[in-house]
Length: 120
Image 1: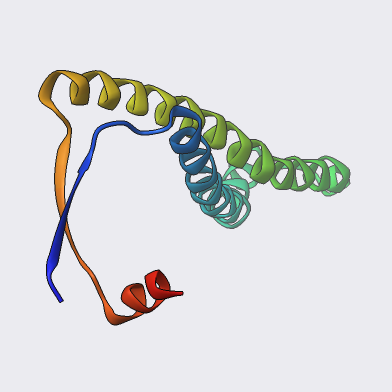
Image 2: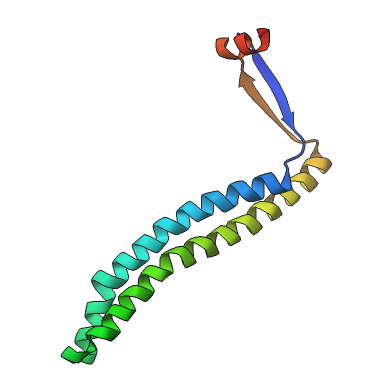
């Protein structure tokens, strides 16, 4: 099994943008969950003790908890949009630089599975 050299000369802008959107969306979900956890477990009790919230403030506390859970999809979608823009700009820059430099050469190894697929 020999090595095969390939050269990447162009990246699909929309393809990379969608990949980055999905990647950043997943990262945003983790960040959103971490934000809700930190807010509900650490920051909210500190603020409550600082401002001596009366016992009748349970409705506003539950509203605050509800708004923190709304933050999860908002953070995820916002990061997804940032990822889409980042991916599109990265692909455009790569395509410009690849046109000037001739692309990026990569070496891949052909496996038995790949040889069997090409026979079929």
